[in-house]
Amino acid sequence: MGYVEWYVFGAAALLALCLVFCKGIFEEQKKKREFVKSLREDYGKREVRFCDAAELRNISHYYQYRNKETKGNIDDITWNDLGMDHIFMKINHTWSQPGQEHLYDCLRRPLEEEDELLERERVIQYFMEHEEERVRLQVSFASMGRIQKLSLYDYLNYLSQLPVKNNLVHYLCCIVAVFSMIMIFARPTAGFLFFIVAMFVNLFIYFKRKGEIEPYITTFGYLMRMMREAETFKKLRIPELSGYFDEMESALMATKKFRQNSFILMSGKRFTGDFLEIPLDYLRMFLHLDLMKFNSMLKTILDHMDDVLLLIHHIGFLDAMIAVGEFRASLPYCCTPTFMHTENGKRTVYYAEELFHPLLEQAVPCSIDASRGVLITGSNASGKSTFLKAAASAAVLAQTIHTVPAKHYGSSFFRIFSSMALSDDIFAGESYYMVEIRSLKRVLDAADEGGNVLCFVDEVLRGTNTVERIAASSHILKSLNRQNVICFAATHDIELTHILKNSYDNYHFTEIVEEDDISFPYTLLKGRADTRNAIRLLHMIGYKEEITHKAEEDGKNFVKTGVWRVFDAEE
Image (tube, rainbow, N blue to C red; front, side, top):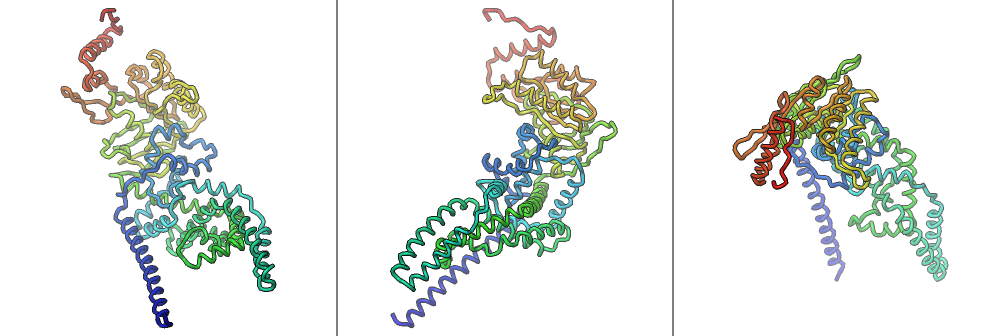
């Protein structure tokens, strides 16, 4: 093959590489355009992104990292009772790891002062009204991406415990490597042998240390992406967010050394398809360039951890507030809460008009106006528990993301507790009743500590016999009838509605019975329930009539006489 043919072949190969490169850029730009289009057109209509238990556990670590036993936090019992993991997933339209971790943390920390809530509202409203700025930030957050295996704060915590090692060993390895290469030219035989020995020693030390730091390079890679995107925020020129952007710019300046020449470490982390990477990888291994750079970057991060945390906080906050705006857009309607201050001995209040549960597709709205305890009665499956969860989650959302799924909402600031979806603890050796009374005790203790308490109880003391249940639960509920407490309690014990009629307001849900069919309007009505459906439901699903009919008769007889019929031995 002559020179001309070689030139033609080389030109063709170069052209092919250029075409492949250009195609890659074109495909990347096409994906970005489609992503931006979806951000605009699917706003408020995106499907809920499901998180499995492992991912939710990782997301929660930021909250646990910051949790200093703040009294107002939503505890695990209440969080699980209300199904807040699912509500979090409904709201979680974030695109970055800091965003979803910040949102989770936000939902677990109800505020009791309005200033920070009003700031959140200002930012939420801004993004809802300024699509272009919202989309540009969302593109940046998506470029940062999420971390699947661990929380970002887990990685940072591990980094903070990692000692910064001296580079002396790596400097010596580098000097020996260079000296061995020079020796090859001076004394080829001895130099080559020295080079082989130096190479094996350097590679052994390199891979030993590389294996130790490999997990942390993932963190560095994420921090690099985060800082790179944060550097573009200032160019957006958004006066309404200048306070956040200015603080981020200061943090970026403080960590500038972390990003300088970072390609020495980061480019060797993954295969990029760049032919130059192959010789660079060998240089890194032989001269320990990336190991020395890692130690330098680690020292910078540890020296400026507060700046890194500030960056993560502000990025997470902005991403989370955009997500809240999209959550609002996904609801049929919602409102911002009005908070009433209840100093000077005033009673606490809770008011909601056409409240609905945000997870239900066709929820029936209910209204409630309470300045003291509320007892809710009604048949099985009539809507009592769902209403309690809707009212409780509304209070949480009001004091966290300043958003309520209702037409109007007003309340005092509360510490929020529930005792609803409990179960026995096999591993702790505790019965259902023991778990239940411990759960209720924490509510009573919170009320005794002072401050406003809003609590929700489903079937008080269901884990014990009827006589003691009514006797004990009536006094527990009576003790929660205070100026600083509003208690919502669902019960099947109609006796409680009479015992506590001077302390609690009565509401109920009912059902509509038509021949062998039963339906529920799920409408909250004033007064106590006067119907039952447990025996009718037995009949509807196929229990024998000799069971259901006799049970119905015995029930009516007990209501009239207060005495249960004793069965004959032959019955």
